[in-house]
Amino acid sequence: MKIDSNQPLEYSTEQNKMNILGFWIFLGAEIMLFATLFTSYFIYEGRGVGSGPSSAEIFEIGPVIINTMILLTSSFTIGLAIHAMRIQRTKAMIGFLIVTLVLGAAFVSVEIYEFIHFYHIGATLQTSGFTATLFTTLATHGAHVTFGLFWGTMIIIQLVKHGLTAQTANKSFIFSLYWHFLDVMWIFIFSFVYLKGMM
Image (cartoon, rainbow, N blue to C red):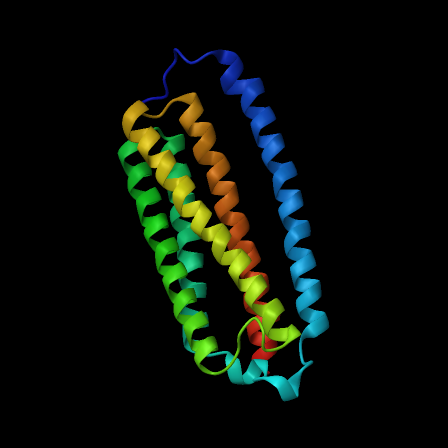
């Protein structure tokens, strides 16, 4: 299905640019949020050793590697969805979006498993400042992924109902930027929280 030429030209040019600019401003605020979380985590990391398990005792390499592979794959599939959008293949685009969301749901499931594991070994929000900031950082990222699942689902519904129009194309592109942002934040979490904590 091709992009609807009946869409107002203003929407497909100036309005789209304003929407994307607004989204970059939103991402700037999100970067500040995660920067604050990372800073808090680094301050408390290694403290309160006597009041709970250390990072080396908490983290398991298996779930971390699985989640990293899941998100990296989802970054590839969202890229394929946008490529399908650009060549105006709506069905392929929807298919790749669905795969991306399934991978996102799998990521959240593994993270829930991790939280249960943390709880069973005595790491909770109340255990220490370190575990509190750890849970907050991971949960904030997980909440963003969960929000992305709902957002992506709404875009798929609009694509099914209205096809690939200037409006749905713009929403899909902005969603892809958001998803790539989540992937980048996970790389930071993987590198500076998990890997550093396991050393």
